[in-house]
Image (cartoon, rainbow, N blue to C red; front, top):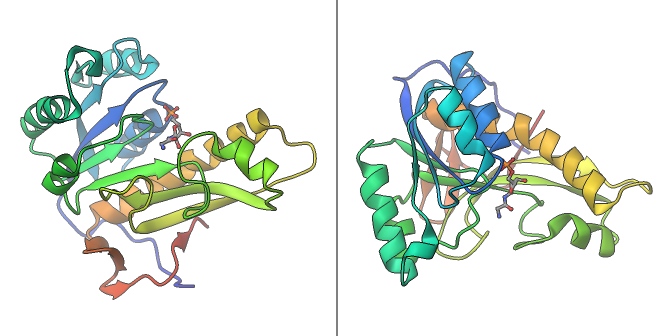
Length: 223
Ligand code: GAR
């Protein structure tokens, strides 16, 4: 496994737009890590497809620009995604961060942000793509579970992985307590991965992740 040093202060600050659908705890941690300098970037805006997403309140309280684009007001995915693109591109973000954004994106949208679009998924990809990952990991008898940060491609939860964090599944875990344990790791993992991205150390090249100029054969592991 590749070992890397975590120096991240070598490039110009980047601009981020964050997409959420719910409580936005990952977005909040990312925001805090931009403020303390761990991530060399600024969140330019938070967008939600859900008008009552809890994270919107945090955005307002912290004077982050926020927008709601309600998918229910659109006839099809293409027109919803085009409206998202129109709003996102006002901010000309270097990176678009999906943080609990629970909509499937069209290939057109994904292509538009090729190499600039990342997501966090609550499983050790490629295991457990899709929903209810914690319950499925327990039901499958997995010994470990976790979260993955990956570049987004047109195929759901299948883009090149950047970094993972692992959690041991213990006998006392229920889907709920395992979810809480994984979420705690997500709050360390996502800022770390975004910090590397924003210091130009991580890139997407076609269907692989490149770190410090070399293809990653296995994902980086949160240390
Ligand atoms: C997180 O656990 C994230 O990994 C998951 O949604 C949650 C959002 O929490 N994302 C997905 O399942 C995407 N497939 P948050 O709103 O508190 O950040």
